[in-house]
Image (cartoon, rainbow, N blue to C red; front, side, top):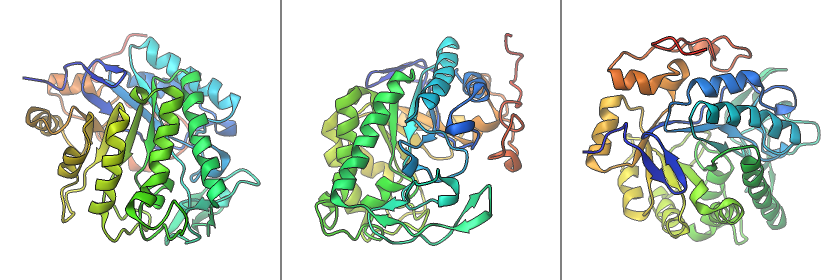
Length: 357
């Protein structure tokens, strides 16, 4: 019988176990949105995960949404990420970078001067976003991308994948969930285009598929994953028929030979996203479902997923694999320090057993 602690290959990625650290925005990038030695310490502490999916990182200045998130498009950012990947590899871990373009979920107050807020259509999202300079503010009204600009953004994803490999990552993950730019293209409520990237389900899926194809052509499909959350209304997302949309997306992505599909499964929907993925995507699946160790093992036993990812547990349990293996309790995290600068609530959560110096 397979165990959470058994190794597995996801495409070209060789994992020592099936416990994945989910990507977690922590808003602790340094000057120029470059990672620092503090980020390297944080990820190295968690290197016993079979795979770390590093936090969502913008592929361009336009792609930034939140304050203090890292990028993957300057030499300073490459150098910062190299600190991280070297530290994780030295500790025996594997790490991929999640590439995240926030699209309309953004404020110009969090961006570099001259950066734009872009989306499939010029439709402002309802809601607000935190900024360091003004606190909570309304989301920007985005500019609609022209057809040629869409292709430019696809090239930014391609370049980000290549740059991530140069920074030492083992692969990349496309963030196509949480209401960010790829999901904005997928969804009828945010995509009201009349060109080849809008209208029919196939056209609305075109952007995501072309991004995946571009990244795969650059670094190999076996190093590329994708994260989705069908039916999630987060960030003012609405889709008239999410089942049809994601059937179309998954059937188009399945032949690409991706390393994995990373599913955030919501149980509150009138359809089952896990069944939808298993019926329409032939590759390996990482399941995220607010699981504990026993529930994750049940999914492995049932063949629902090849691996399971954990987000909140990894905030306060750098040694989560060891805790699961020992049947130990998991430590709670402090919500007040999730996004605050500095080491507090970031690298100061203790391991169950003392770690070697």
